Length: 410
Length: 117
Image (cartoon, rainbow over all chains, first blue to last red; front, side):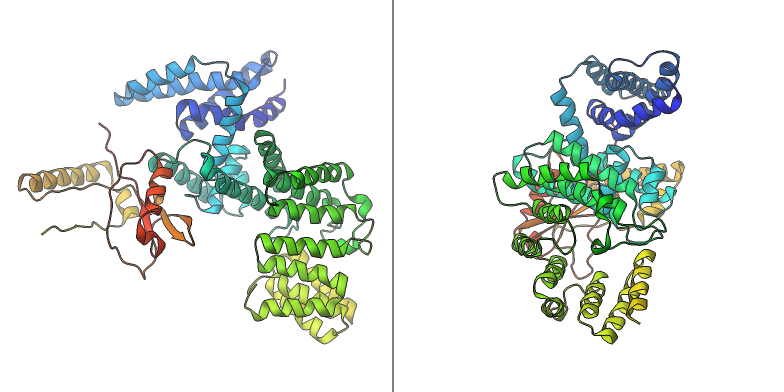
């Protein structure tokens, strides 16, 4: 095997191997170091001979022994921790564990990384680093900060796990629903940052969207009875399926109404549609992600922008507003209403949101207003709104879109 | 009368101390503690882990809200404390959320420093 083939297998297995190792050795840093040691051994052994039957079990086993070596060296150096060595040796005897325990390890790792005692951006960073197995440099790039600063943030987070006693466990029943919401929020944040970056030269960062979908699939496999997970996964798949149609080769935005729908990924849309149906059929109150996915599904099914089922989309936004009112959903609702009752009615709704002080500083508000005013033929007002929208965004492709709209109105 | 003596210092600067300086400070603390134990003044005392390990707990509308890091509102002042034993941070947060003032103020949950035996 070539080193790059070995690296790929390692990358696929690292998250799950790490999850089990952390449980066995009880320490994030020790587990990470030991797994890196095991990777070095794998590079040497696997290139010389065939791949072991179960690479993950092999990695965990080798890493376990590397962890014991590390602790022993420290014990000799510091003259203590004999008890820990003993415990590790006992743990090391367990080689083949049932798959259910290994699945639980992965959930333990996910829930620990998304613990609410961490700031949201720390949860995202820890998840990308440990669950997704991204390097510190890749995580730093996702946050547009330096590698050094990110490394320090990760060190502090792992210290907090140890020193503050954040448990390595799946939350108990009472806490599970709210903790799962937190995990889903982290995954969605990774996805949205990949789908529409908040700043910089590129509109999309598909690597992050791909990681988020991978996480969603993993979570859906580990906890298959949760409508929220299926809904979120469906939502991400359906949005991501339109990726090829959303951007020109030059990096300009193509709005939904102008997209070439033949560029959409049909297989991914089919998968998303199946998941939406499953999510909506599950017992319990409708989940916000599932309803958002249902909206995305209506767009995905529509043969064209004009032939989209706008009344049903407007209705689904009203369902979302009942689940959890938010000015952003109100704004989307207004945009759907503009397709049913015309831009004038929608503008009233948008102005009502601003009058209440909602969405102050939300960069897409002036853009939606501008679009409505343009469609109503109020060119001067539309131009002023596009200028406000341009000033409000940090994203180059959006600025170019607004400039194009203003040119088209001349 | 009983008094709570609260120790404030720049933890970032303090962490930069070399081993010898830290050892000297530790020895001074041990001597001080022994002194007030012998004089009968000592009731309780602990070193705290740094603020990077802190979690602040608030309860609003019946929901427990946690934030990463220490208590940071200058509008609120220290009004009391509990030292509790809990199996992990989740259990400590759960207890903190039941403190009546969690509904109107904030509870900072900070682990106690445990010295290696």
